[in-house]
Image (cartoon, rainbow, N blue to C red; front, side, top):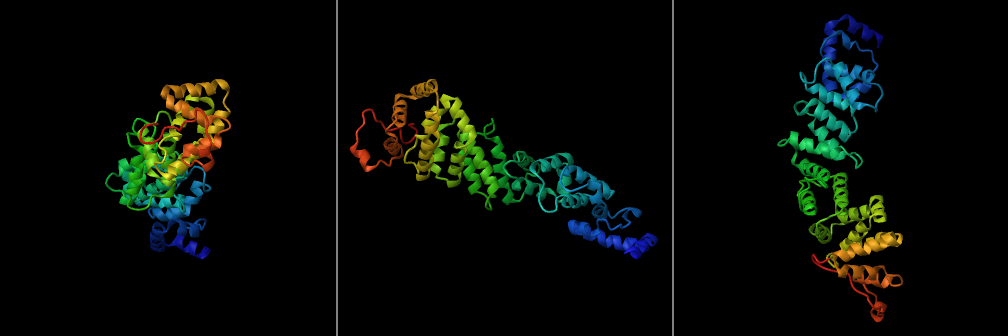
Amino acid sequence: PPALLDALRGHPALRTALFGALDALAKAQPAVVAGRLAGSGLPVALDPGFPHLRMCVLGGAAGGPAGGDRRGRLRAVLHTAGVSPHADPAVLHTAFRLVWPDEPPTGEEASLLLNELGSDAHRLAGTRDLLVAAALAAPAEDTAAPLLAADLLRCFTTELDPADRAPLLLLEYAALLGTDGEGENWVERVRALRDGAVEPVPEQVTRRVYDALARRLLAVPVPESELYALARSGDTALLAAYERAARGPAVAERLRTAPSYAAARFCDWSAYQGTHPGWEATRTALLAKVLRPAVRALPAEDRTAVEEALRRTGRGRLDAYRAWNRPGALGRLAGRLTGRGRREDERASWPGDVQPPAGGGDR
């Protein structure tokens, strides 16, 4: 009310008492206080101090509308506090909650904030866990999240909640796949991190690392031990990610343009028959729904190149491929590839029919 504003302007002691109480509320519930007091006209500029209250009263106007450059808005809100976050770390926490009241920052925003302000500022302000939440909640399209996870693991080595370590390690490893840092035993490493987590790994983290692992398993070359680990795992979510990636546009483009890649996929998808029902379902679906339409659509010279690539891997694979790809015998030969031959198949006899390589490392 205007009478209260006039009293506050004229009585410093009243301002100190009221602003002190409001500053404590603003520190505890910044978004609520800002919603009540933004545009109120409280004369907070008359006195130094009360930084949390100043941000709640002046921060909305300083930062402009919500959205857009939120890091810029954070800097503007911090400026209204009248004190550096290095001198009073708590103001960073308040500003953080004013700019991101309902959701964490994006992975890119959080990564930049960590590097701009330094780990000590976030440690003292209590915003470290907000950065962790940003990494773990980041959607798949947020490409900065794995790098943020790596920075968090590096900056807060001994301070992270045990429940957060495994998800962050999985995020970090998603970025290492396909680089010199990927190491060995990709499938087992990912599954071990997931299974060793103190709490269930967030679904978006699991999906991101599984998608990255699936893309790596569909690259060339892939160690046979990794493909066998995939087949043996029977991991429903991982096999689903593998099939999803194999049906995607990147694989379709390579099958269309690189005969050697089509040959490699035939070798992979006709391997390790009977290892696990989940792998059987996945590989046979990919043979029938992805590889067969792709090779049938190739020009003659590329089909010849596929066979030549298979010839170099061993005669058995070439024979298996020709049998699988021969017109007129698709259903029967697909049954042989899956190990689910029909009764009428057993009555039929076709010259030159062979069964693709099966079992162990013999592909």
